[in-house]
Length: 425
Image 1 (spheres, rainbow, N blue to C red):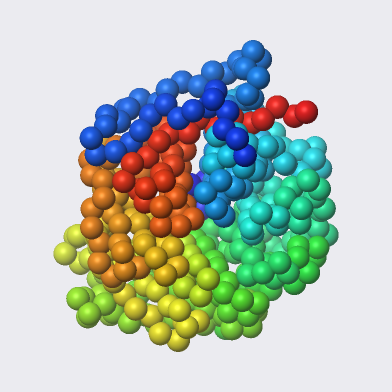
Image 2: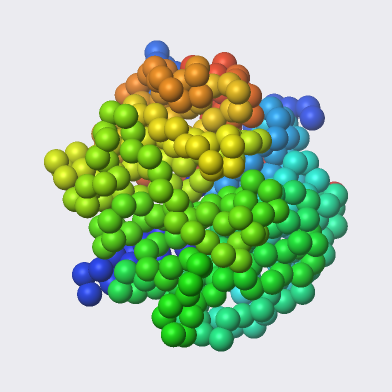
């Protein structure tokens, strides 16, 4: 799901603009499909589970699966806001708490937000910080594991910039086991989003500050301080992209690329779609780029534009040659969550700002060139996580805490999962 830190920075920017074995106890209880009823109210999970040997209920706020059974997650149990690092081996029914012990004892743990990057079954990284903007306090470290969370090590302290209002880690990505990056918000206001970019080349042991705000207000060949930054992705140890939006303050789109591991950045000029040749040239169109995604060599970015006519439309931009060439395909909804399987299908779950408005789940058999509706009249929206053409997961919401659902037929039907944390032995 979208991180609260990014949402808070968006609000600040807007203000500035104006100024193995399944447990039968957790068998899914609801199925989602075109011919089945959908609950409009969430079922209340018990807050006392002392008599339930299966474990405590957990609310997941992020999931990342690498096959149909095994995955990582972040979540919290009732009456404890601390975000735990979790692993599952039974498609999300039960989860093991593999949170680094040192992070639990951190003084910030009473009100924390966890930023994590997951890479396969063994490697994960997590940075803990306060959940909302507060003055930076103490040291910040990245915890890393190479054995599936059985053991963790803490990195060296992240070097802090000289000037910062707060320290809000927003995105973290790894190109391989050694090379990773973390984007951190440091301040916001007056259409500015001040960020730091950290890089590690030793698997998270140490981090170098490669981008930070300039006291003079000008940074050549770097990320500009204007406009919101909402995500980053790296294809290898050198090539990467940062996305964002300027909310109409500056024309065009916000998409920057680097070819030297994040030290220098240059703007990307995307081609306008064939169906809208003036899309990125008309200054009356307000466009933003979504958090980027990468699946093997395929990099994808959603571009959503509020057109001068008052309507909103979205396009999916993809490149498989490191950004040398980009193609644009129209999306079937104005906005939503998109997930692609490399060389296979793609899905888009429509998002709608109007309360109670129905949404549609679309599927593409040609990697986003054409789309067909798969499910309609849905009362939920959220983020998709497909591992192949048939098996997928999602964290969805009808306005309450996220709920986990999964499919084994390519998205035609979904069953709800009631995730539990396994009791520690």
